[in-house]
Length: 407
Image 1 (cartoon, rainbow, N blue to C red):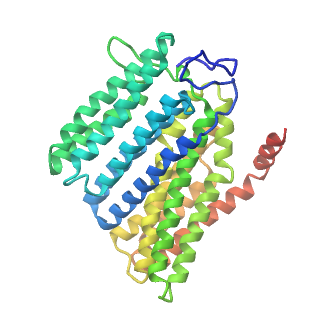
Image 2 (image 1 turned 180 degrees about the horizontal axis):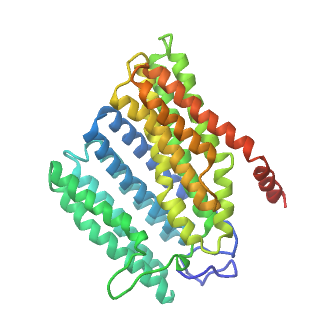
Image 3 (image 1 turned 90 degrees about the vertical axis):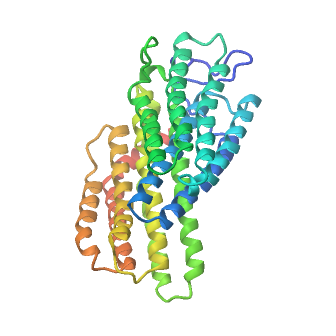
């Protein structure tokens, strides 16, 4: 889409956000209300993975997670452009909230009896929201803006056919159809939504208000961490009579704290500052926030499953499934954070994160000789090392951010 207007006003009756160049758009209450549905969705995904902790279940939950993230982040892009304080936009978001609730309830049985419900809710959100955006822009919108939305609608509608078709199939046919649909949607931004006859867009035309996009994605990280806290607390309440449950509970809590620290101590604010001052915020939003944040959130979701395992079966010997969860969750989280920080800060791979990933790889071999509880304790220690290392090594950066905020 076109560049930001230079004044905080929009044409009378416009549904687009009023913007000032370099400003920070407000995240509204209706957006937060919409996000509540995804607290439930994340919970559904983690519980589904816990009860299907095998290769087939992991692939199915991965596909569903990618779909949940994609429908949320695309809505984040739309509310970056539209003004949620306008009545029509609020009604649209409430409709999406209802569809999102249907989608969330269908997640555990998406590959069984609720496949068509999941696909129908997903497609209605993706395509319906995009068509609403096309209408909301109005006839006076620049031609380049309208072409962008038309391109997006073409890509999502094409994928939508496969989503709905997959919902009518069973087993491997459903998975294959949905995987193809998801591949189309994920390739869209990478291919700049190229459509024959309409050409392709460019990130410089996507008109991103960087501060708003950064805050929205940060809030989704909070959603995922909040779900992890809920899982930890509810599982501890059921097992607190066991002597080792207090140790496992403290380990899970410290892991959650370390994850919060790694992202929110500096990364979130640095990312927001970077995208707000970048010459091409659309590029940063596409890679850093649309693609790379899914690794961060996935790491939290998988780690939450590991926390529940360590609380409910602390003395179980590590097997392939439990080791994959307990080591893979923190590894995904560190990898996602490292790539995100590289992208938004234009730096090399953070050494603290590289060491942390190396330590997690080193733990894989002895992991099968350890109990689940002690393996969880060691992976938590790795996360804490990374958090402390980065905090100490980036003192000067924090000082500059504080001084910049005061100015």
